[in-house]
Picture 1: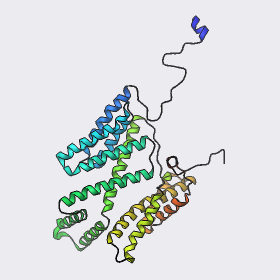
Picture 2: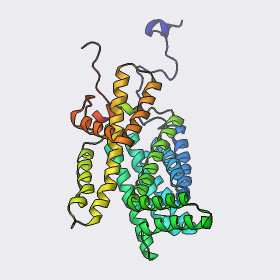
Picture 3: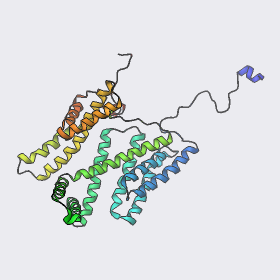
Picture 4: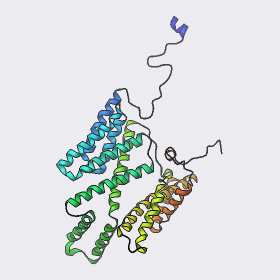
Length: 350
């Protein structure tokens, strides 16, 4: 030990200071070569995902959010909007070469992916925001297809019916009476519920986009909150939508002078609201079984039974509506409360 060590103590090795720096969420890799590598990798995947948009919306959503997530966690995280713009541009170019009617879809996917990355990495994901994203995407896709159908001298419902008619004609005389009746039932269902096809497509885009952010976070070793069914909490306005849509769905039966479009819209919105409230009821069931210490298999079995009950008797959605009003799980509702999940009493206060 030299004189300096005797007087001042041991010499610290290089790289060790008086205190450790705490790296905030979302800042990993910034200021070093890792951040630059994430930026380049993210740009590449974003452009590739955008180019896939005219071919497969789901694959494009996964790849685009995967790439945007890397850009968001790079040295230049503000360039995530530029990456989304490049993804949309790649989709537009491919759409012009492949199918120009896919241009709105390419732009929509880029916007949805950008919004999803902002929400997930900003820890601002709520069921209400995801629901609004799905509704907005549904309306954009529906408006785009309606415009395309109008320019071709037809309509979206007529296009659906034409597809089913061609399917029936392709069988020709080989169709028996049972198959003919099934095709006719399918045509009636499509005529009544064809908007739900757009809702499902938009929901798939949003969910696949969310999955892309999770895959990217795992690749970057970034910790994100893990959602559970027992923490699901539908927005409170969903209860209002459910009541109003139910009233609109049954109104034409009693008000004969009412425009049939009111019942048509009400029926479709009611089905969508039932799904959201059914998930609320299943979340309450899962939460109750977790509190009672049931194993995952039992909880999964209970959820499957709940799906059957909702399909047959529509009771789980009513349970969800009651939970939405009564808040049996003690959820701290609000921006932070929805992310934190059910409040649990601490051991000290028990």
